[in-house]
Image (tube, rainbow, N blue to C red; front, side):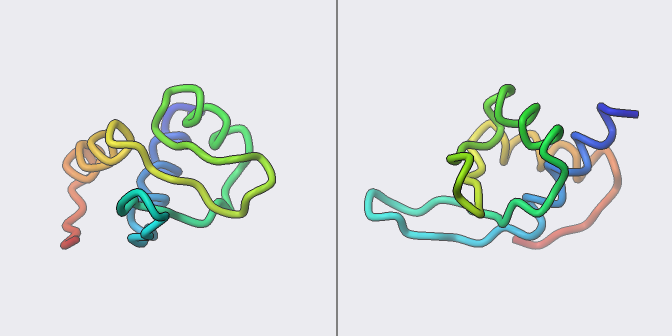
Length: 80
């Protein structure tokens, strides 16, 4: 069950993400209002990055690619 929660957390981070220009280019960013255990796991897997004190995280290229695979796995149509 924990793996599914982590997958769905990544999927929600991706679906609710927005493009942010942080000075060196654009990045997908999302607010981190999800269980810390899942966020920590996603960070360890290099799917997201961000400081512990920040209220948002950046999705890495690997995280975005994994989220797109999860869209297919769960049959979710998303235009982004």
